[in-house]
Structure formats: structure tokens, C-alpha cells
Length: 194
Length: 293
Image 1 (cartoon, rainbow over the protein chains, first blue to last red):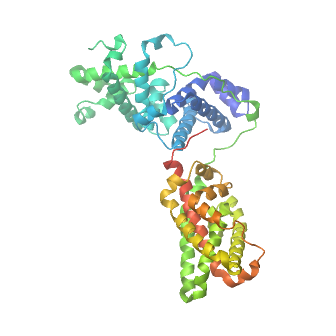
Image 2: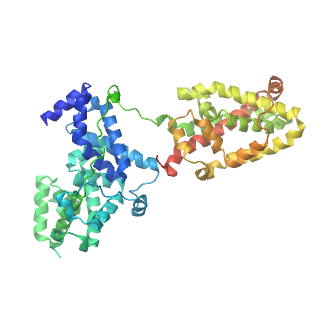
Image 3: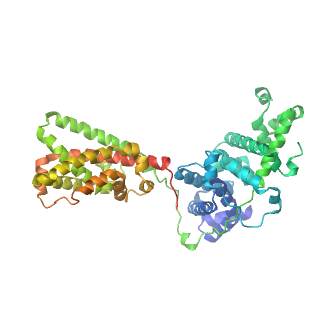
């Protein structure tokens, strides 16, 4: 954290190399949020790139406790603008999300835990996620996929803790329903209750 | 424990409990409830499973590095500027200008003569032509004519537009007088053109393609937008009419005879067009899907 504060300070005084160290550290975090919001890798990378450019331009305005929350807020705003610009909301209905086409699985070799999720389950989770209203989706992605705490999510979404809590609860309820509809797809460790 | 009386099965608190985000008191309350509620215990487990499944979704690694190149080194700014604010109010401004003009017109034509009426058709022909030419001004200029708060870039187009408008008006009016054979053609054209101009309000969704959202970002390239926008039928109709009005035919004289009133008409039509175009530019991006790249 000390190292990060130092980088931020240097970046704020105009050191692009220091900023790029922050980019390297956070690019996958930012990219993942954009990916879950926009649904396509190319669009996600473009939005992530633009997020970093915007972050660099306005880094002197950063005053917060959580740099990643500040960064993700820039990215979330960009994604929201992009979705509105598209004029359709992949978030607003499952059908349009499916029409829009979910991303191909990444080419990289899967991480060890990922083998637990078969392609079908993953597809239905991603579709359910894409079918959530935009704000709920942002909240639960920041929480469960990106691992932010509620305070950080409140910063990233520019809202209150109570709103974060209720958005996550509603989104999670929906994800739970999807999960329960396809018990046969769940890894065995999730089926102990059956 | 007040929450407990409010709600027997606190699902929202259960979700926050899964995230370890409850305060001490609420957490204890949930745990007390869980101890005696089988349904909530099951629900808790399912919520935990849902969280754990989501956290196992594959992570996307960008295929390229997103570090910034040296070309960005100089790009610093104090605060991001809002981009579309100036445009959001354009329809309201254009509409109020139109209403004001109509009001002035109504007062003026209180003692209106048949002479004035005769020039209406010529005036609207000219206006529909003028609207095709200086469309950037046609879209937005009138607001700067009366409103000081209007955007300065738009204001720049104003004087030249009004100039163009009255010139073209004069030229067309002259054409109507000096070239009788084309007059019938011309006087039928404006009706078609005028009715076509009314319609974009309803069918603009179909008539205006992707070009409009760009107009929202950059007012300058509007001419092409408006040209395509005032509907195909309008363009076709006017295309049948000789494209270039004979500008050599004493525009000053024609200007003098048609007087200030036709200029007023032109301004009215420009304001009406500005209203339709700016309304479309503001709202269409929200209605019509825009394909990027």
C-alpha cells in the first residue's frame, strides 16, 4: 500500500512511468469489469484503455482511500455511457443479452479452480449476469468477481452503503434462482444439500 | 433486534452476512435467527454458493498491455468536462425561438396584405433550399440570434446562415418571378418539401440513420446530416427542381419586394427545423440503436 501511495503520488506529479506501473497492476481488474458490463472482449479492452487514459488525465483529482475503487468508478461510468450509447441495454433483458452474443471463452489455459465450472454452467451464469439490470450487475460484479468491499463499491458506484447492500442482495437472489434451476450443472461440492 | 420484528426472514441481511458486511448487532441477530430457521439456513447456503460460483467465473486478461505511451504524457487536465450539456437544451431553445417568431409574425400580419401571402410559397421554397445549404446554422443558429447563452461555436454560424438564408430567399423569389415555366414546379415542390419536413418528428426513427448521434457530438458537420435527414422524399422533390437557383437574377430587387416578412418566414422555418433536428439529435441516440465501429 505504501508502494501504491508512492506510485500515485509520483503519477500525480506527472510521472507517466509510475502511472503505468499502476496500469499493469490494475488492468486485469478494470478489464474484467468492462468485460462483464459490455460482454465483448474487444469493447472491454477499448473501454479499459479509455478508463486508464481518463484516469491519467484526472489523477490529480484523486483524493480517496481506495485507488482501485476510484479507477473502477471511471471504468463503470464509461461502460454505462457505452451501453446507453448503444441504445440497447444488454442488461435489460436476457434475450437481448443473448442476442448480443456472449463472449467466447478466453484462449488462455483455465485456472485450476475453473475446471469446476463446466462450460454450460458458466454460460448460464454469464447470461444471468448479463440479464441483470445494469446497476445490480455492476454491484455484484464488483463484489463477487472483483472482490471489493461494500465501502469501495459505494465509492465506485457513487452511491450509499445501503443502496449497495440492496443491489447486491437483489442480484444475488437472481443468481441463486438461476443456480437452483440447473442443479445438475453444479459441481458436486455445491450439491451436498440435495 | 428491531429488524427481526420487521422481517421474519431477512434476506437482504443474509446477503450482506455472506459478504461479512453486517455490523456487530445485525450479525448477531442474523445468527440468532439462523439458529432457529431452517429455511434461512438453506437460503444462506445457497447465497454462499451463488457468490462462490460467481467468483469462479474466468478472469479476462487483456490481450494487449494497456499502459499509456509517451504521447499521453502531456495530456493532463483539471477535471473532465461534461460533453453534451450544451446540446441538451437545444430543442427547448429552438422551440421558444420558433414561438417567439410566430408571435412576432402574428403581430406583423395583423395588417397583412395579400401581397405577403403571395410570397409565402416562394419564401418556403427558398427556406427549404436554405435549410439544405447552411444546415449547421439551420440546426442551431437561431438560438444564438436571440439567446446570449447559446454556444459560441454555434453562434459563429449564425450571421452567415441568416445571410445565406435571405440571399437564397431572394434568389428563389426572383426565380419565381422571372421564370414562369418553373414556377408551377416550384410552387408544388415546397408543399411536398414542407410536409416532408413535418414528418421527421414522427418517422425520424426510420429516416435518420447513424449519422445523427455524431451530430450530437459535433455540431459542425450537421449539413450532411440535415440534408439526409429532411427525408428522402424532400430531397427527391427538390432534386427534380433545378438545383441552382439563378442567383444572377437581381437578388437585391427581389429582396426588396419580399421585404422583412419572408426573412421572418425563413427564420421561422429554420427555427422549426432546428427544433426537429435538435430534438432528434438529443433523443435519437437513446431510441435508435447505435452500432459502434
